[in-house]
Amino acid sequence: MKINVFLIIGSVLFLTSCAAKLTSSMQRSYAPLDSREEVKVFGINEQAPPNAEKLGTLKVGDSGFSVNCSYAVVLDKATTETRRVGGNILKLTEHKRPDIWSTCHRIKADVLRVDNNIADYFDAEITYTDSIVTAVNTQKNIFPRFRAALDGGWQYRTARLAGGMDKEWRDHYRKMKSGFHYDVQAGYFFSENSGVELMFSRQMFGNSSDGYLTDTEGNFVTSGEVKQKIALNYIGANYLIRLFDSKKKNSWLFSFGLGYMGYNDRLFFNNIENIKRTAGTLGSNASIGYDIGLSKNLGIGFKLSAMGGSFRNYKRTLNGITTNETMPEKTAEGLGTIKLSVGLRFNQ
Image: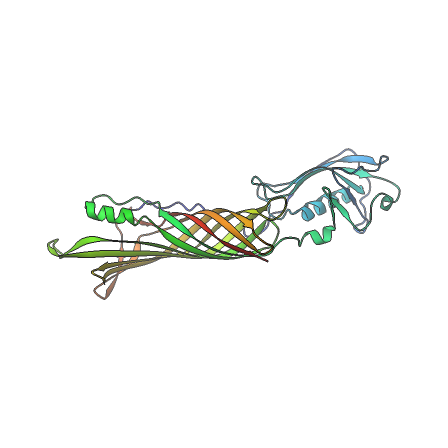
């Protein structure tokens, strides 16, 4: 079977976090505050002290691909800059939560300064989070860190069939382009929006049809049932991007990764194994999914994914004798598939 090489669409984006980007424009500054001195945060709908002096503005957001940019991290970056220019009040003017365009919380704010005790204006133990008063020190931990998923569904091989085959064999392989699979994933999130996971996927294809055997010179020997079973086994690591809705109940999930893909092809004639081919290669995986929370720890998920890989070298077993084989130049067995899945989600 002649196959186009499936392009690796899921290179691992980054396995280390990238910091959010801060830009500022200051018209005035004072001596930096000591790190122990407090900077108060006023939300978008809160009124800052009327006598506060405005030092400038700042913006914290996505640097292109930032993942270490939870709301607590973004606020910490903004208050550090406020302290650096001598301000002691940060007045939020805009707050965008993570969405499909960015995994970051993004804020704009005015940097202000008052000379008297700022504790008179705000409770010293809490800070504002857009109409929700919450402790910044605890906000970092309000998300599920562990995620397990069990999926099953349909898949389709994307590679083209080789030319020059008899009609019977072409029909046989065309019926083998679709099949069923199951996936098992176990992941850990080191922030609300980003994490890593281990994944195992088994894809199965099969078909049976009437066929015949020929000798080495192409002469007819006998007819009977031809049955073929192909299995693709993938194990690898994925980088995860998770985007919750406003209630933190449902979420979009994007994954990209690389791993090992094994190929196992068994051909039976009248229920007797006649030929076996095995191979292994580098595989890739990319997916987009949506998880729907049913309870605190249990949910259901839907996923569209693509897997890729190809090989030229393989082992062939015929009549109990195994040999190493190589496909002709400019040909390869393509392992690319598109998968539709549904399954259970477990979060903790």
